[in-house]
Length: 190
Image 1: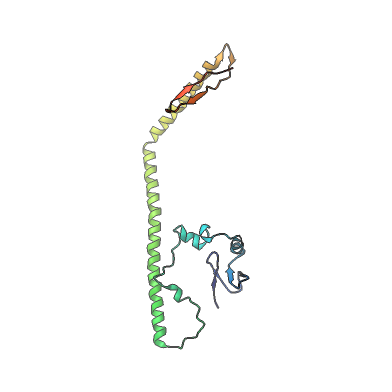
Image 2: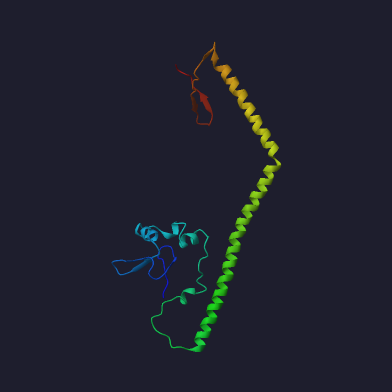
């Protein structure tokens, strides 16, 4: 029983599951579901989509398979049967265990590095919350002053705009920006 990988998202495709598409040149593509098949036909790049393995690896969320481990040699399809040799089998099993051990160690280090960034962000947020909590009285005081200042300014505008009980429409002042960066008021024309 051979478990294929999805050509688009790299998920496992089990026998009798998924979709197989054969191109006119004879190249076969396996897809785990219609979502991957449709995205492949739309010519989307798996690296640019967040939900694919390639997209996660590109954004640093997924551990990229190291070429130094040469894991692909163990998963390689071999059409030529190899004559059984007890020493060769023992060496292969030992090498596979060693490779798995190295990969597990690297994955732990990768996960620890990723979580360290997350923990640092959360620690920073907590420090910011403490600073805000300590200076909350200052923030409330400033907000109160702003509200009071606005209400006073609104009352002043209403008084200035009234002429003998009628409301006068506010006219826009025209300003011109000069070359040296200053502004010049222009005359209003009625």
